[in-house]
Length: 187
Image (cartoon, rainbow, N blue to C red; front, side, top):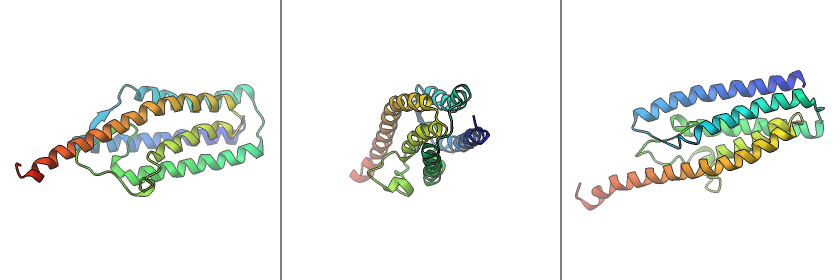
């Protein structure tokens, strides 16, 4: 394994730790405003999968010692960097509402700025996750890690996106219930 690849994976680990710091701060913000947590059952699996991605990148490249193939490695590095940019664009666009868990604060409107203004791209952060999860291992030829992560992540994203859609539907329903008395004059 190249020392620069080890550094890249360690930098992604540091980025993940930064995400957790932001997430914990944002969770406190959301919960203080009556936020409701959804999908606690799948969250540990998500943590394990993302930890496994980073460990797999290191273990597979240490064990198999694949050569760096510039024609694959450089484009994959560009995708890793682009996915980080998209991820942080999502985080900054959602502000204190971004979280690694699904927490919905009733009464807040949907975010429609940043990548969330693109109606055809409903979950841009998960695009970043999918791209990074495939590209990071492939930077240094960790094909097995890329394939395993991609398959498991696809299955987990079905669960996660259903959870988020359900949470957002709940928030819309809560908002409608609050607005109904005001519209009919009975409130």
